[in-house]
Length: 294
Image 1 (spheres, helix red, strand yellow):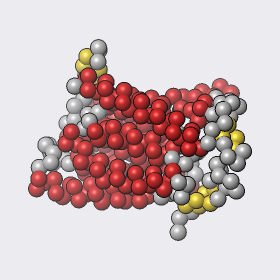
Image 2: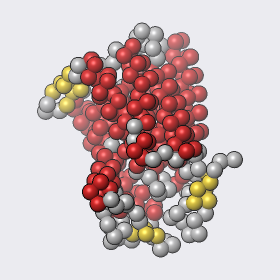
Image 3: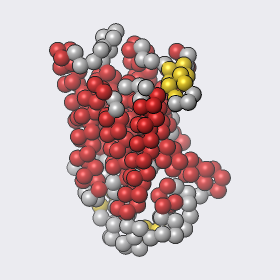
Image 4: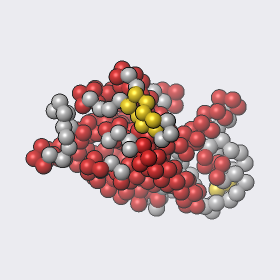
């Protein structure tokens, strides 16, 4: 039913169903559309200009999922793939404009930074969506890495978002189910899943005004992408790990995965655990900074 891809870090490289992230897109949007229907009765959010946060998030997830599915189908080159999230930011910009979301960011020790209206909507939002989606998409290749790490950040955002947390109840539940099977090596979420979850993180942070928290939470992702891009542009070299049938090791430091495994043999789950702990630490730091900024 689903196309299969080899699990390169398992003995004999068994074929695993790929692209199961489509279930996240479909089930999350169904949940959010149902929430959109009921929020009019229960007045969950303070809706302005007849624009719903749940509808906004659903549209963004659909756009992200579609772009990821497009990449899964035709295997786009990274130079084109990097700019695809700009398209996905268009509905978020238009809906955020109508919602009149806050354009200021409060930072500890610095204070309030108020961006101009056009600067916020046409620079900050597209930049945040593009960067977050791409860095999340670049940290993968191991079972659990593409699913567990975003789940940690998603849970952190939900924990500090007040009434907006209800937006993530459905998406987070679906993602955790996918993560369970992904960690066990039964499925891959594919670019459909990684694009959709990246868009979810960025758009939810904008909707709930948790941009600072998200920016700090994704620092390990940004570090990973910086290593990958710098080594590629400077040395035309790509990151890779060696697999001896049981453990992973690397002879270079060109990504977060190769940095963790540099001259150190670790199992796939140990590598995922180390990186997940880094993400958990950055998320905790982001939550603390966000609480200080409130």
